[in-house]
Image (cartoon, rainbow, N blue to C red):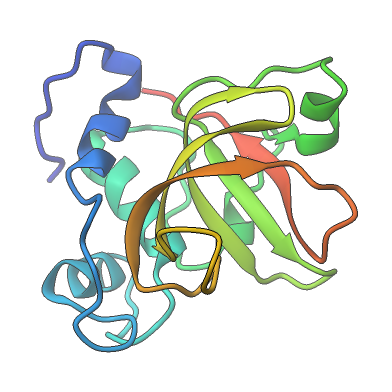
Length: 168
């Protein structure tokens, strides 16, 4: 059952919920009581990478109806409604606040996911899980949940590829 949340902007209540977890850190690798609940939400065991489980847990508990996917795999959040990062970079599309930001590692199905707080052209603020608190350390397998500043860098091996709006 979704948690009832109050927000100044009903279309972004999942961001309010996500912010509640900023600062949660791992007790052991990819595990803490909060992180384990997120992993269990998508049927994964403690110790599994949890960025997409965090996204699923947050949108599910906030009552979002789109995207419908609840998964531990970031690339599963790329849908027909997703906005290509290349279109954002050249200014023909904008990223709505609260969208899910999705990274891809090379040409694999693996990557990373989080939420956009605000975005303008090539960069913006995000809320992400399983990342590091800064530019040092793993960006996709860090030690907690943090607010970050990120950029679209098309030629990078680990790069932002899409933004998926969240709807209620």
